[in-house]
Amino acid sequence: MKTDKKQNAITKVTKAIFPNTTNHYDTLFGGTALQWMDEVAFITATRYSRQKMVTVSSDKIDFNKAIPAGTIVEMIGQIEKVGNTSLEVRVDVFTEEMYSNNREKSISGNFTMVAIDENKKPISII
Image (cartoon, rainbow, N blue to C red):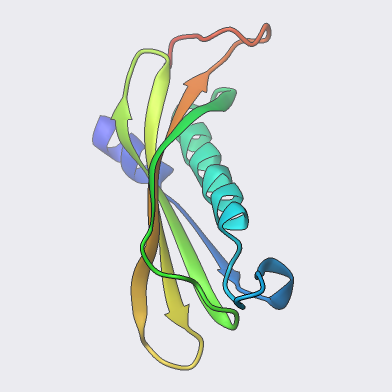
């Protein structure tokens, strides 16, 4: 059952890199990438737990390759570890050229998400 639950929580989000998300080097802003990755981590954790989740940390974000304007990114979130009140979600970002089959991993990172109650206190993940 746990494997199916983890499998069902896998989240994929695809975006096009437009000029409004790029810096003066014509590549995706790092902060924008982090925001998108955190959102994917949140969705993944929520899909797994079906509880209110918050980000408590991000760890080891590796920016391996700049993401140029005019490309497509696919972010994939998956549950790596389940604790009593927290989940570790890995998010990988892949860059695809729009008009070829070239695809490569550009960014990866881990996010720790915690389940909270109505008083914003950590609670057990069911």
